Length: 178
Image (cartoon, rainbow, N blue to C red):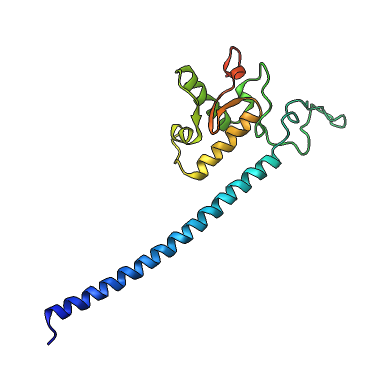
């Protein structure tokens, strides 16, 4: 019959082996997580670059007018390769209302206008996601950041500090649009 101390030593040895195995597995998973995070960051950077390349030039969409096709029998027709209505962000100019933007962009402008009205400072994209009731996860935050950066590039927003957004002075001023 084995002694009580001997049984305890066997159980201790088995528990120690299990702990060592779990620590090794945790280290392996931690290393995989680090690699996955790096890969994810590379994809985020790649997506930003693609967005920058595919984004129309600052002046290309707002300064052009739709010219009716002379071959059309009726009223003016949309160009064949044009984007869906409100899917592009035009360059801001005096008298241009927020209604030219899609609902998502209008929502961003409204949140920043509310902050300005209350005398509060710029918003980060994480804060915007929380204001909109979204899950504050990287995918949602990056989608908002992409939209905010596009609004900055078109003159609707200003970015006084990296990652912090507010209405551009001209947009926030009298007659800036609503």
